[in-house]
Image 1 (cartoon, rainbow, N blue to C red):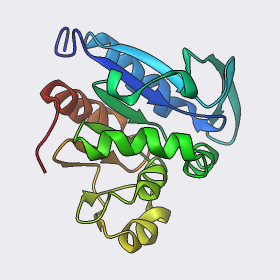
Image 2: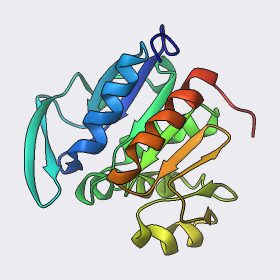
Image 3: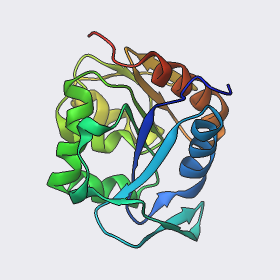
Length: 184
């Protein structure tokens, strides 16, 4: 996995309260595969991770959401955590950013509660997906075909359930990001 993503720029969209390991481990895997990653947030400065049951570390924001264009990125990573996607799905700018990736069939990887933001785009209908088990009804109500599997791939959309799934998630994320845009 040394150069599959060489020349690819990957957006990682978060705000305070993302599950720390769902950012750090996928980001390491992306960079090890040669990708350039940008931590993007609605605010400048730093965002704070959530480490299972308490606040985690602070992470430097590379780009403020209002200063980037989705068109400039090859793919999108959406870490989970409960607070993070709940805040992002209420942010019109974040939802528009995520919507762009779905509209033009760029690869997207979302883990745990990350699919909450995808639901808000209105673009999960007919997609096979997984997530943290408590999102099952939300995804089904949005028209997704929810399944309980370690990792699910549907034409460039990669989803997983929780931090235990990260190794499988990372592998499929890199494969799909390397492939690029997918026809629906």
